[in-house]
Each structure stands twice: as C-alpha cells, then as structure tokens.
Length: 238
Image 1: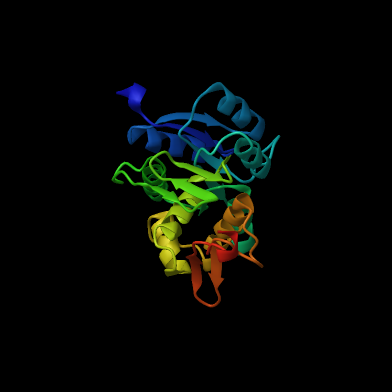
Image 2 (image 1 turned 90 degrees about the vertical axis):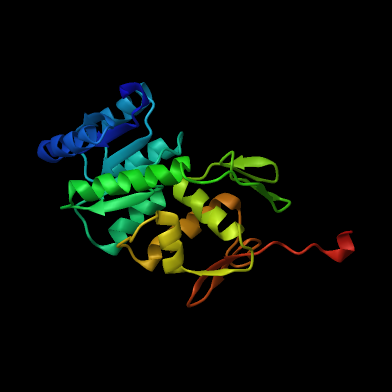
C-alpha cells in the first residue's frame, strides 16, 4: 500500500537525472518527492517525514553540504550523497558532514536502488534478531531501542555510526580490519577506500567524547584497523 511505502526526498538540480531516478524509485515501490535546489530541499524536509534523503552535492541556492549539515542538526535520517567529483577528498567531505553513503556520477539507477535498500535495511534492522543492551558503565548501547548514552546523556548517531559502534562493541578486544568494517557497516561490496571507515570512526569518537590520543573505548590498531575495549576499573576506586 502507498501509505506503507518508504518516503524518499530526491534532491538533484539536473532534471533529466532527477526524473529518471524518481521514476526508478517509484517503480520499485517508494514514495518520492523531488526538488531541484537546496532551499526547496529544506522546505520539503520540514514539510514531510522522510525515511531517506538522496542529496546532490552541487546545488543552486543552497549547496548540498549546507543542506546536509542543516538536516543533521535536527535528524539522523539516512543520507546518500550524489557527486560528480570522484576524488577521495571530495567523498570524505560528504561522509564527515554526516552522509551515510555516496555515489559518484554517472551511476546506474539499479545501483542506486540497491544502495537505498541496503541502507534502509541497516537502519530499520528488518532482519536483525532482538539484541540485549550492551552496558559498559559510562557507555550504554541499547541495540533494540537504537539508542546510545554516555554518562546518562543520549548521543545522536547516524545509522552508519551506530552500526559501526555496535559491530565493534559486540566483541570487545576483537580487532577488525578496515575492509571488514566496510563490509559489515556499509552492507555491500563498497567501492570506497579505507579512509571511509576512518571518517566514521573520527565522527563517532567526537560524539562519544573519546580522545584518540588517550582512548577509553575505541582503539586504533595501526596498520590494521580498530578494536573496542571495556575500560578497566581502578581497584583503588572500589
């Protein structure tokens, strides 16, 4: 039923691309609202409740970067960034702004559909069994409730950041390579680079207040990847 369809905001200034992608999405059962500039994107986002935003980087009136930042100020809705730029640094910028994925033009609409579905599966955990709460004292990860708290305060994480944290925290002490984390967190054969995960870890550390120079939970294993550790209690404090 149309009322149950996932709602997607498509933001793209090139009408041919915008119309083609919207047609593919609607054919695949999604409810789509399409706009061609950044200002209209924010107006539509305030007007409707969306399950995902597909956002072009280069937009008139208001850039994709500014739109992404404005959305992230109020929402953790999944964002796929579209860009004509293929350089690594340009891709990293989108991820550091809070985008969950990116796709470089020209792209196949079928690939976009696959990424949309993969990202929605990660967000809504349609195939995940119920999980217990991971309680590490100051840090509590409620996987079922999709909530993270540090010192009793809720921390707002993007879908990718939450998946990264839960992947690491389920197995304290285990070292994951960057490519293992790409596969587990991004959910498919991602064409990005190892620095994609580095960007997500950087954002996650900042939100958790975990100093990379003196980490409490997230440790870098140089030349390999990352691991999660449970802080040891100070016997003198007992």
